[in-house]
Length: 248
Image (cartoon, rainbow, N blue to C red; front, side, top):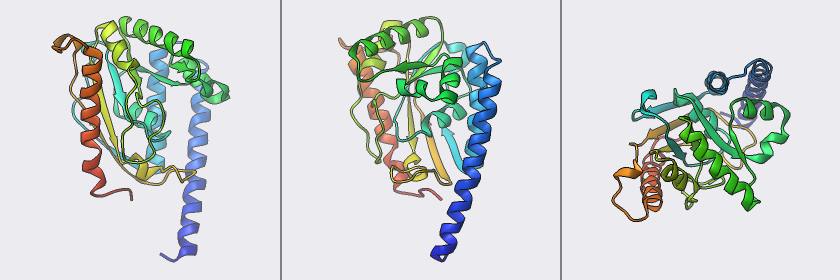
């Protein structure tokens, strides 16, 4: 395709995609104002995520079985590449969970209401006391029977690699006595790279790992063992996608 036509097509896609995302987020913000139950709020966020991803042409497939609802709470841990990660996980997991997000999002009016309605957990990464309080809140949430999603890298990993994991997610799982479920998101960087201001159409593979139960681990340091196993699972599933098809 000639460069001018390619640029025109990209401009049309961005205008259309931005309009759909803005409209969906505005409707979600309005409807969320009438919702008082966190689980219903997350269900609305899931529906909105699926609609936005479909409008953006972001296709995804899920490999592996999600934990059954009757199996109790767990800690989901995933690699972190872009702002698409949370919508992708919301869209792919048909279960209720809270996610840990950066505190700065509470300064964004629309995102703030949505985050609070879902009883998601903000963390100020620059304050050690905030991180300690977040771990306590995660454990409390897990013991109450609600799952929690964390990105243990702590920040975006813009390339196709995987940063070292922080230990908080795994210590929380051990303290609450719940399993860890690793999630590998492969192909997100091809849909929304660090160099792009807006995503593009493409395909993402989502891999769900087996439950890693701390009580079944024969190790004197179960949190560290969980951390190693989760990192191993996620890193093993990232390269398998990138050598192949890539984004459309």
